[in-house]
Picture 1 (tube, rainbow, N blue to C red):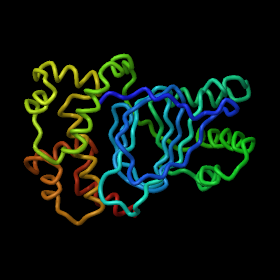
Picture 2: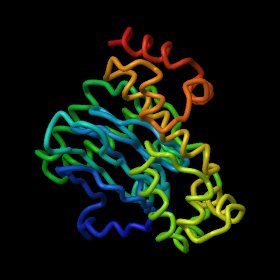
Picture 3: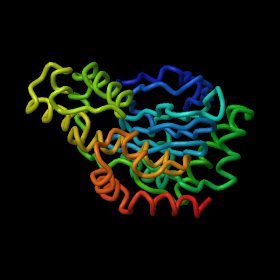
Length: 282
């Protein structure tokens, strides 16, 4: 699905950033990008996070920093603990920080976030800065935002997307088609989906569809579909007592052997080893 160029219209002329606390029945599939830096913290909700060419699960406590023009969306999926999903979102242009030589190291850090950073273990201080942000006056908010970025720079983090060559012009041009195919796969990955059916659905030849999909999404069609299925399998491995064969079939795989092979390729361990590792941490 092609990301939509979002115009961040909520930044008031007298403010240098935008801050929102979102509360929704579900996070919708809104594949988009914008020139502003974005920091998103999931307070309530779980589902699948798409950033560039990466597909990952998210849940409460998910904290992600996104660089300029990096396509992304968070999509609610599965049974939720609460009726309302909520998130804190900060957006700001990097140019504002570039005006201060004292913040040059933070500007460098934000440029390094061009493919996104995930913070697996944010400190208590970082969570408090985020959750208390809305109660501050504008001046204190600005200082708090700088403090927040500085703390994130020093926090353990992992890169998210591997895509370094995104054609935003192509993405903009193919928006409707990408939206259509991504939404379809997100909603139907548990069903049997093959290349011929998908190319027919998009009114393309199989060969052209494969080339188009790789350029638009960053993965081959089969790789993308497998990644989507494996992420859902990870959730069921850790939230249910279903055996591996049941999870394999529920995620759209035809047989357990193929599921195990794809899972190990994506996660570098078997499904049972993944389940044991996560349960041990809990």
